[in-house]
Structures are given as C-alpha cells and as structure tokens.
Image (cartoon, rainbow, N blue to C red; front, side):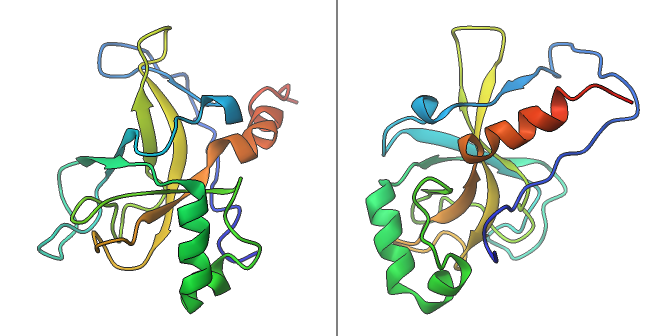
Length: 162
C-alpha cells in the first residue's frame, strides 16, 4: 500500500554504549498514545523555512491531532486519499500546527514524547512519513503509528540470531 508500512529497522554491527546523550527510546502500545492536542516533539535534518536541509538536528513541538479530524482531512484531499485509501485510523498519526511541522528530508525521524517514569527518556509514537507542504494552516504532518507495528518490530528485534 502506498502510504502504509513506511518504516524500517536497521541492525547495527556493534553494541551501542549508553551514556548521557545516548539513551534507549521506548515503543508505545495503543494505550500509551496520548490524547489529541498533547504536544510531541519531531526531530530531523530536513528542509527549514529557508528551503535548505539543516546541517544541525532540528526539533519542534507539535500538537497531536484528533484521529477523526485527521481522517476527515484525508477524505478531503485527493492526494491524501490516494496515499491512504483505507484511511488513517489506527495506522497513521497526524500532528502539527501552522509553521510547526516536519518537512522534506525529515522522513524516518521520530515523533516522540518525553517520559519520566522509567528508564526511557522518550517514547517514539511515530515515524515521519508524509505531508502536504510544510507548516501549512490546518494541514498536519503524517506519521507511521508505532503501535500498529509493535508485533512486527518485536518479532524482528527479539528473534534469536542464527
């Protein structure tokens, strides 16, 4: 499907040493997705307002959109309908506000929230996937929703090495 399944896993060739600037991120279940209007952080090296890719990692806090409002947007725009013919509910998160959005080149980056209650500093809610422009009024960014792929991710990550 066109806009669905927009994520990948990479196996590192060595262990990562954890330290103050390198910490694990948690992956949420459906119950962990916060309510609409909660602010999440999106990060990436994508295009900035000036139209150039950033040499410095950028981040911005964006509000999560109500899933029903996101679904209505998809039905309203032909390009989004083609990208998500089966709708977005349970597969895609929408987040963003005017002038606060992911942009071209941010694809694959995290949409995350800070956690304070355990060993993970952040919980990755979604992965930057698609959008119509950047930071436009009433047009959010579209993010592959992690809980929809949690079984697939765990099946690969926890699989025994041959």
